Image (cartoon, rainbow, N blue to C red; front, side):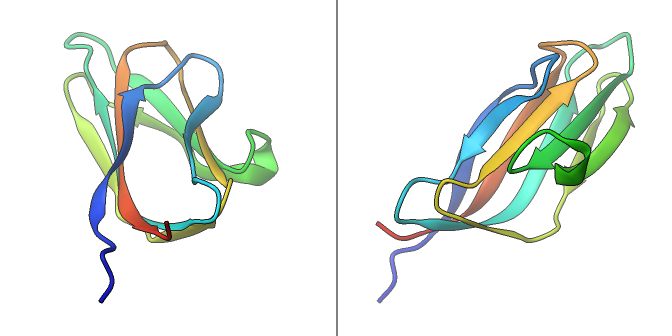
Length: 108
């Protein structure tokens, strides 16, 4: 019987320059089920961008998206990532957008 469970894989605040938000552990795979981005600034809208396996335009996953002040967006597209694959992200202003990455970790 499998003990794989959907769980919170990573959370934090998006940096102002693209940085790694989550790396799949070695000898594992993951199915990302949901990414939630929350604008914690109660006054100003901010934008967020997400990438898979690097931060070049060819790695773009979620194009630059504006999030209203105090609002959130949820991406529920399924993403399957192999060992050591990464999710990168950035915001137009550091520490204004919080991210939560949920998924199913498969492996040891």
